[in-house]
Amino acid sequence: MDCTRKNEFSGLTVLDLSRYLPGGYATQVLADMGAEVIKVEDTGRGDFCRHDEPVMQGESYYFTALARNKKSLSVNLKSREGKEIFHKLAAKSDIILESFRPGVTTRLGIDYEQIKAVKPDIIYCSLSGYGQSNPNSLKALHDINMQAQSGYLSLNGGKTSPLHLCDLASGMVAAQAMLAALYQRSVSGRGNYIDISMFDSFVWWNSML
Image 1 (cartoon, rainbow, N blue to C red):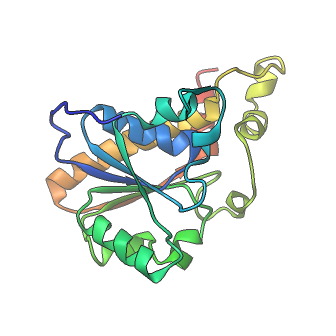
Image 2: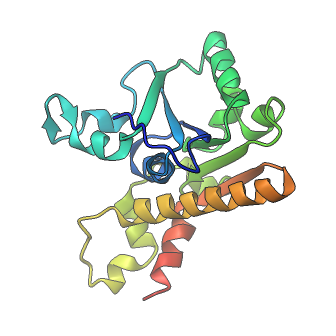
């Protein structure tokens, strides 16, 4: 899945801590533009979508669609060694994207403030259900839940979509925000923290209805 294509983004390094579609789709945009995207996966199953059907030649089609042109590294972020490895990677990176529940990165020692100490101009993007300060982001949820809560299912006559619309909306908003932050950094020299709410992202899409 490696790509030798070079362009304006070939000098950009992105650490992707997310799983499944929203974060994977957001960083896929950057990978397709030529950025070096490194998936930082756990030492167990890794990204869960690696195991989703259908599987072709031993590899999930879902994972292939989201991980093309990306690299992967297995790290135990709960260990001291794993944290040190991540900090070294972060010091040489431009963007970090994570989709843990709020508070997890702080407990792991890899939240924005701690990474900013080793990489002051880092762009750090967090993806969650309702934003980092909303307690509802601590709950488990799926795309279909947000389609209902946003009112989309009602507007669509109670019919679901074959696509994970909320996940895709969030991934696109995150990609746009990261690109905007890159431009801002090129002007000001400063990094930024981006707080993406999946619910807000999909409600914004619904405004067209």
